[in-house]
Amino acid sequence: MKIAFLLRFWPHFGGGETVTRVLANALCKKGHVVCVYYLWGRNSGVKTEIDPNITARKVVGISESSKDGVIEKKYYKAIEEQFRAFCKEDGIDIVINQWIPPKLCLKIVKGLDVKLITCLHTMVKYVPAKLKTLKEKVFYTIFGDNASYLRIYWKYKAGVLHSDRYVCLCKPYADDIVKLYKVKDKEKVVAIANPCAYGEAPQDIINKKQKEIIYVGRVIDIKRVDFLIDIWKKIEDKDFAKDWKFTIVGEGPDLQYNKDYAKELGCKRVFFEGFKEPKEYYERASLFAFASCQEGWGLVLVEAQVHGCVPVVMNSSPCFEYIIQDGQNGYLTPEKDKDQFAAALEKLMSDDDLRKRAALNAMESSKKYLASNIVCEWEKLFNELYK
Image (cartoon, rainbow, N blue to C red; front, side):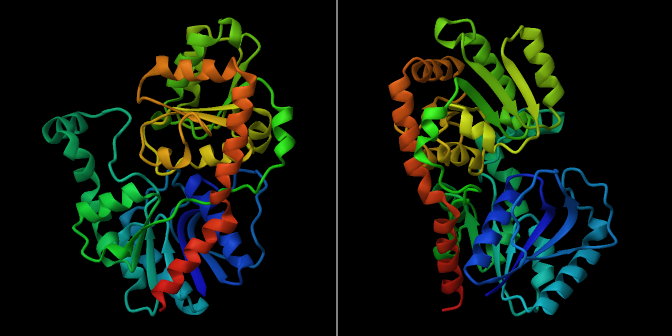
C-alpha cells in the first residue's frame, strides 16, 4: 500500500507526531510505501528514529509563525492544492488524516482514487480544564453535561460521516461517536490504540530503579501539573518520602507558573527538567504520576510501563482503564481526589516488594501496545478497506 499521513507539524510537536513517526516506521518495515505531508517543520533537537524510506513533503507559501497548529482559513486553498498534488504524484492509496480539519481534508481527497481514514486523537466528551471566558461559562451553564458533546459536534461531523474509516483510541470513544452521530454502519468507526515509541526493556531494569517519581508531558493546564505539586507537598516531609524526589520533564506555557507555584508552597526535592528525551527518566524512576483532566490515550503511561515505571493516575478518562488494571500494573485514583492519590503513592513508596510486582506486571501488560503489534491492527484495517 502507498500511505500518506496528513499532519500540521513534522517531525516533532506532541503525541500525534510521536505516534505518526512510530507507525510510519513500522509500516515501512512491513513493506508499505509511506509519505508524510505537513504544514510546519518543528524539531525539538532530540534525536528520533525516522526510516529513511519515508518521504516527507512540506507545504510552501503559508505562514511559518503558527505555534499551536491553528490553520488560518486564508491558507486552505494552498494546502488543498498542494496536498492533492502530492497524493497524485506519489500514487497514494490511503490517506490517514491526523490533524487537518475534516472539511479541508475532504476537499483534498475529493475525486482522488484513495481511501480516507480520519483519526481522533482525543476523548469525545471534551471537558476544558478551566472555564476561562464568559462565553464558556454561559455555554456550560446552559447545556450542562451535553455541552461537552455539543462543543465538538460540528467540528468532527464531516470526518465521521464522510471518511471510509474513523479511528478512535478505545472502544468507549468509538461507541460515543456512533451514538453522537447516529452512525448506521458501525463497522466504519473502529478502535485502535496508539503504539508505544519504545521497544521492550530488559527485565533487570527494575533492579536499577531509584526512589524517584516523574511526570513526563507538556506543561499545560489540562495536564494539571499543579495537582501533582499539591500532592507532593502533602507527602514530601513524611518518613516514607524523605529519600524520594519528584521530577517534572516537559515544557509548555504553564511551566513558569508551576515553578513559581512549587516555590510558593516551599516544596522540597522538586526538579523541573524542561524538554528532554524521557527514556533515561523512565529507566531510572520507580513511579509515574499523572493527573490530566482529559486524555485521548495517555501514551506516556504505556511508555512508563514498558520501562517498569509504575503509573499512579487520576481516573479522568475512559482510556486509562484499558492501560491500567488498578492495583496490578498501576493505580487508578478517583478524579480530583488528591488525598487518595497521595495514599496510592504512599502505598507504593513504602513497599518495595509491592512496587516491584507492579513494575513487572506493567512491563508484561504493555507488550500489547508495542508498535509491532499495533501495526498489525492497521494492516487489518487496510485489508478491510480493499476487500
